[in-house]
Length: 507
Image 1 (tube, rainbow, N blue to C red):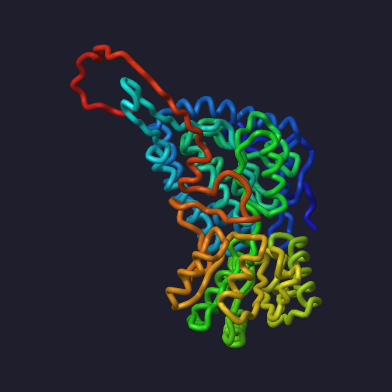
Image 2 (cartoon, rainbow, N blue to C red; image 1 turned 180 degrees about the horizontal axis):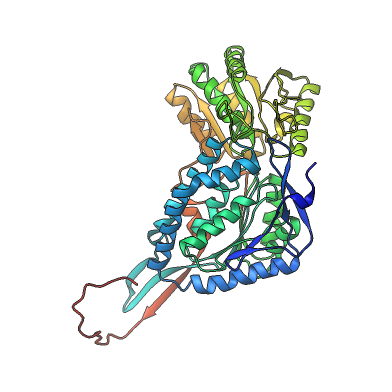
């Protein structure tokens, strides 16, 4: 066993520098591949929460006074630093989350898309102008930042999910307080240091480590203008209700139970490949993972055989790789989460489902204490089972046999979630009908994980999204700014600014 004194305490980032915690409360951080405790993360107390918010307020006063040209220069500097050093961040993610290095790098690249969108923010925060709406009267609008904004991010994407929000928030002139997951807190600190190197003023990007006490501190503070959250639906609903009660703007993205509808005319090799990729990538720990394959008969038996064949070839191991190269899938985040995922397979089996491929009890030679759970395939799961209805958040793929297209659509629409879904078919008419009828926020046509690119917006329907706006894209800039409309009437004075033959410059 590793003693507490052998590992570092992971603190906060406040006032532009790392800060040790004085709260005396910590939580363990593990390497999921080995099970070893690699650090203890500080859990903020009320005074540290107040310090973090006060620092962000000071940072906002400075940053919101920067010209657009100066803010844009900092955004571009951050983008270039991130692009040059993203391998460092990927290694941190793998060590604390467990996902394989290529998956960690993919997470960063998708987050970087939002950074790149945010570098073009001047166009996205422009106001509008209408001249002479009445005789001698003009009307125009301004978009201004909110102030201090809070971001509460989950363990499964310690870099990408924060990057869905903070590039947009910072570009728009706000100051950010990020509360990362206690399970993998170090990526946030790395990003904070990168912002400082890019020239962001102190206090504009703050990292507050903590648990529910830190969350509630952000939700209840009168000095925090908005909350952005990604996590499970029960917590998303709590975030939305609590923050709204305290007068804040809220975007709270919740859980999912994503279905893939497979029509008989689909290419079953393509479907099998994509079902494995979307069901078991990141060990199923992502809200856009495919959890259920709705197989329109008579394709179920053949599809199950092809998926099973592909599962047999997957390599499970330490995401950091080794002498044999990088594995296909790493461990789950904690032993407790592994037990939860295993419990859902137990429930499915007790409810009459057939476990075709069983990932329970998997071990990896040399890392027997890691939090391993192998890819699991379940057939004939009753739709009344909790294992069908609830989000599992692990590498468990269920097959439900349906007789018609409409039966499949009705099953998707009857669920409480509405995050992502996909259809696999070569029938354009069926695909068009599907995208029109299905009650889900993000839809893939022969694409299993339809995460929109950064200049569109991310978010689901129903119990998958609570609040005022989706993440990033135009929705993001609308969320992190507020508009003023000005109606003005002026006399027509003769004005001039003197003589200056130099080319006009921004400053």
